[in-house]
Image 1 (cartoon, rainbow, N blue to C red):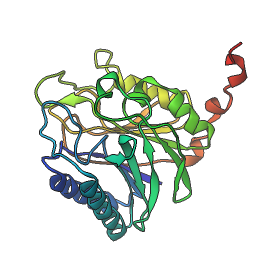
Image 2 (cartoon, rainbow, N blue to C red):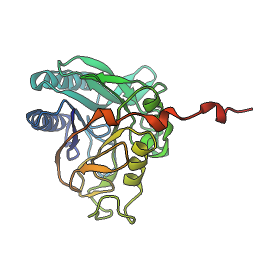
Image 3 (cartoon, rainbow, N blue to C red):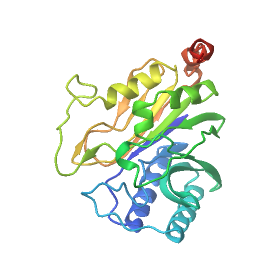
Length: 264
């Protein structure tokens, strides 16, 4: 299976974000990818102070999702599209999963919010497994994938062969100038995603924005913890990687013994 990881710039508007989605989806489809993942909260854009993110609404978000479903069907490719999503209980940070026929398969919520996000979103409470082209996968969003390995282990123990990881880490104003993936002096993010794959014996595919000063690269990590490929730092585009799902055994995740950690 070929998977695609998008590294777009921060959208200037919802319309600009949808144009980027369409552009990168077409490129991924032309390179025979079967699924593409975009970064966290890509529509309307991650609400960092330095970015002017268009104010969203339930109507705008539904229209954007409808358009993304159409883009998926037109290009015969599944899409993981992270969005803000309005509910009666508050606004969720979600990743919608759209089939290659344009059918909405559901969404994964961000359940473990970063402390800085408590006033932006409400936390979700459920986890899901999805399936595209016979491949089962989970989704863990940004902070929860970096700092809550349980979110990935849950997916692996429920037969996910790959976990997608939409996130935002970086800035267009200041930050480190990274040159080597996984360097000991890099921020810890790339080391964390390496461990999420290795400790579960599955693939881990991480999608970040293409900022001027990214703190991690969009990457695909193999079940042995090796970085199979990554997008050049700060360069917009799409990374396409062929994975061998037979190698994603989930061996280490399934050897976990939760009864050893039961409280008394």
